[in-house]
Length: 238
Ligand code: SF4
Image 1 (spheres, rainbow, N blue to C red):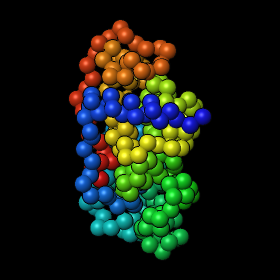
Image 2 (image 1 turned 90 degrees about the vertical axis):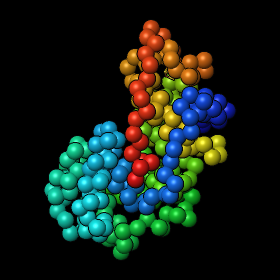
Image 3 (image 1 turned 30 degrees about the vertical axis):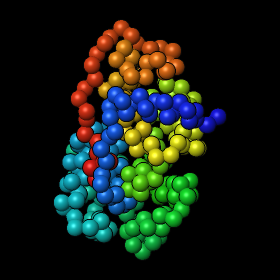
């Protein structure tokens, strides 16, 4: 069953009322920049992945330079983001394979593809999953696509918007017929909800703006903890 669109719209209204409309880049960033930033963002906080991204941008004039650089050199530059071996390999493989296939380091060829075709095209590259591909579509191409990371997966399943066992399955159901124009605010505010209120353990349901419509059976009403201050969002800063 696909997602309940009425519920998506109601949740979005409540999140916007609580957190506001999240700011976003005035100019859309380059899609290759977005892939690299998203690879760096895996399993770390946005501050550290942003430092690693800036290290690469400062060190290399263009991503073409990475064709000649050893993987271990990239690993040193991105150390602050953790998982250096895995992330440097994913970056090196992506740049190398993109160049081999297109004879340039550019993702212009996906611009005219439908969302699902663009995702299939991007996920052909080793190390690029559905989440990374969908971040390119939302943040670099401005499409109305809602990427699903661990926070979005957890929250939309708890709320009852979809029922799916993995982030990729949640993504497919959520985006089958997503309501127009709200993907960026919905995605970004859900990440904020997941980081500050609807945490993996002991969610602070007592202060949650979605308490009345959330279908989660194990709500935690014992604490009235206030969430943290708004945290930095990497993918709106690339
Ligand atoms: S009510 Fe609780 S479980 Fe539901 S979204 Fe809010 S914090 Fe999460």
